[in-house]
Image (cartoon, rainbow, N blue to C red; front, side, top):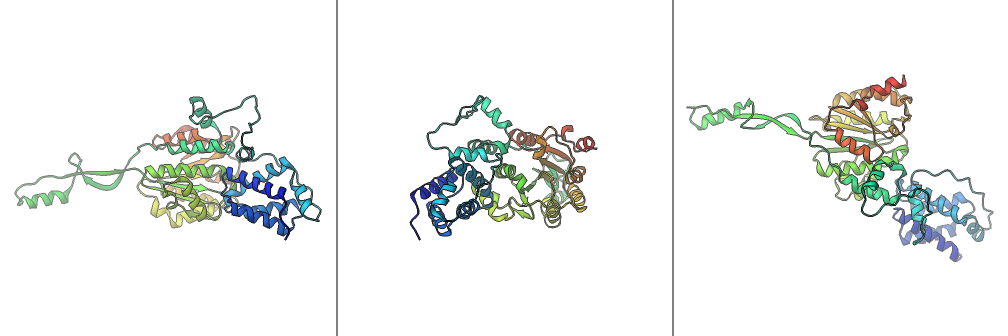
Length: 402
């Protein structure tokens, strides 16, 4: 095997550093393996070069999107790929495909590709975020869509999410506890006191119902269309799980996975990494009906108790629409105290419930809310202890689409 050319090695190494800055765990060993693989494979096409680097640098499904955006921006900006292929291989390189327009995650990659010390191009309305957010910076960040955030903004958003607090809502359970001010007479304790006193007197004991925080059960869609939102929502679930005792988290794309135990890790990034390892269908297709069927059959009796609140996080774009979807939604609604559907598509002012999957699900939820930025997350926290808002009534969406 010939020795790798200097330009080829330098550019692959620079590309690896850009991936590492964008959040991918790319080490020196992966860089060496990538250079050797490119040399050994005798690459002749742009697509072959793409997948050779992908095989060496991408170890998790959730990293594919960032790698794809980085590859397009890096090799397009320098126009080196065809030149390098021509230098190292006698095979004529193919013509590159037209670049697609920027997708979610591109801003994060663009920052990572910018050389150290190089200033970004100045635009008319440039937004600069300092390490300590001012009031206006915080308001801009609260209103910004998760899918349009840069890497720095996502990091600040995660810190703000960790500060969110659920309201101290409490519900009465079927169990009773000793309470001298209770309104119910505890017959067993009363008889025990009477026996201890010799039966000559009756000292009444009172009890009241035990009050607890209702459990939160989250069903999170991690399919490809929800990837930019589901990760930050899982950060939200991790934050409230640290402060509440009973938060049950499930993710689904083509199948249902329980990640409650994985989210108990103290470090949120480690928790999401463990959840990503357990959920093998990350960024796959969407089978909402199958996931709900599995949840209702295997988990509903275990976790939907004592006034549980279910947060269904999905866009409702079902892959295989079937009559069972409405049935499973109705069964889920009857099993919990409150079913809240969180849909990122509501961020569009012109949203209408036209899709068949959305129309099948809407009649079986208590509330229909947007979830696409920090402001909507804060509104969700406030709404979980308040009465149902007319703005979140799903019937108004059905009537507007009729």
